Image (cartoon, rainbow, N blue to C red; front, side, top):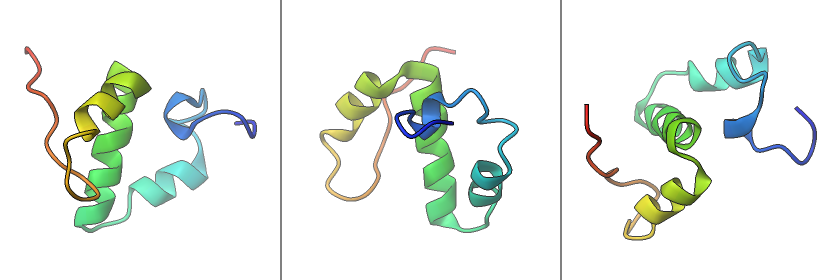
Length: 67
């Protein structure tokens, strides 16, 4: 990952020990970090920012996704 890449777009995301050791920590906040990164990877940064604009805290609900 170079200095201009975002963690959610990193091509080494799945194999990076630093990223995975951070995301594999236990606790509610780390689960929310995982959820945010998974959402960004699936839907992009713009969709994440759109979802987050109505949050009143550090995290909130994501739009319902069609299965």
